[in-house]
Length: 429
Image (cartoon, rainbow, N blue to C red; front, top):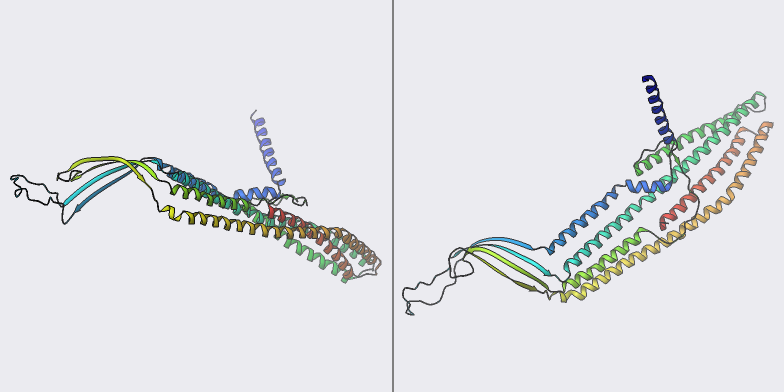
């Protein structure tokens, strides 16, 4: 039983290892996956929580304006003179009467409690201003986070281009190796010579050299993408080549929401200005202990209190109301100018990107025909080489010409995809 159990455990372990190994080998990424992962991994993403917490703290602090406000104070003074009754009691016939005077040293400890009854909407306007300001900061964060997509585009399509070039380079090496083998047999039959073989061998070595460079380029791009998305990427990871579908629809860039949030934030100031014109009504209670108390004729320490209702109205706010409202309108127009400028520049980018897409579509129309013709010329050269009427140098020239045409097509395909996704980035669609 123990041996059977050990065998089952071993088989299970091997199965789990094999399962995860297969998953690692079959791992693949799409460009949309990279967008999500890069944004989630971007350090600035944590700022959203900080903005939200700051908003909650500020709202909580402002809401405490509805609670009773208490002020404690203590004071000790010495003054050069005090109030005295300006007559002599004995001269008036009141003998034996002593008129009290206040000490020049005085002491006072008070606790003031006030309760806001109506503040004219001031606290409500402050809360709205806090919310709109937090929204502006969040929409600004959206703009900064969205910029990560542009970095993903550059890196992702750099990887796709390097992979396509590596694959084509290896096909070129296979073809050059086959021709080297053929020329070697031709040399044995006296049809070719050593220089023909050397010409092909040089190009084969150059192809291997280029492969090494392309592999390092891909590795560098993959390392940058891994850093950007915060995940390890194995050498076996597959990067999905997106479809060449042109983006349609309107402009959904986060900058537009940012401008709208700024306008709402400025408009919230109108409520604050209106609240500043309203009177304030509240009640208060003051309790104290001091010498003298409320009775100035008693020069002893006494407890005392007073209570009342207080109405205050800052009339001076009416002087600046019109200018404050006009200033808000100017600020709104300023934001609108920024938004219109952004839309204008975006429209220029859209025209440029659409022109580039049309160009690459047109170029791809001819690439296959050019490659077919180059391939026909190369095959004819191989036949001539087999008949001993063409040198190895001339054959490598035709092979390289075909290779150049194929590389042009690869480049045009990746450039087309990148132009399409750059257009998607411009309009966020």
